[in-house]
Length: 214
Ligand code: SAM
Image (cartoon, rainbow, N blue to C red; front, side):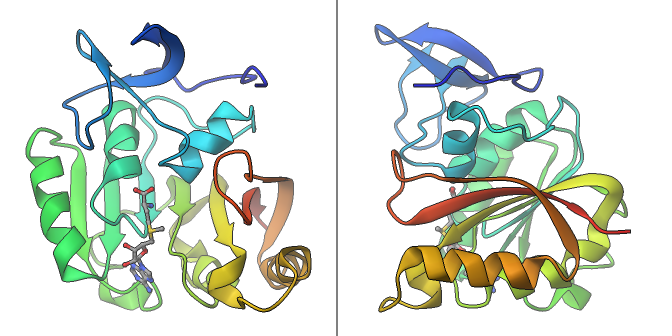
């Protein structure tokens, strides 16, 4: 395990259940172990958690404004909302979006949005301009395109934190080829600062940190 270079304020490495684990402070969501008000952030359940665990430089800071695409039932975005500022969570499947509403009950800065991340015009009136971080984990075909279409929300010095699932693009291709294509498309609007395979925690996934091109 690599020690993270820096963790955002509000994310700590704490001893929980006899192990040093990434943790945030908030109501438990997915049966994760807790210690007092701290809840373990399980990198095997969260690509962003894996990126932090692997020491990727996400540039996330406590109080950041975040737009999160592919929130599902809130496993990862609940941790984000524990330390971030306003956190807009986009999910298009009604069932997980319902669970997300309960996750938001104890998190006043978390705003669930039932919307399709491929149609940013449907939530552009809600998400504030110039967010510090665009986090994306949609696991659907066209992941680079979704990131490009949502670049409009990101501040010039903001960061895209993208998890790419190779099999969502093409189950039959070598993941490295898929990742190369995704990167090439992404370069139309972003400069990739760091990328790392997340296989220790998520098979055939790539974590990417990028910033918008001016
Ligand atoms: N990020 C979640 C977490 O760590 O807790 C897990 C996300 S899961 C891998 C991918 C989610 O993206 C699914 O819930 C799926 O419904 C959602 N999704 C896929 N395509 C989407 C789209 N175009 N717009 C919004 N959500 C989408």
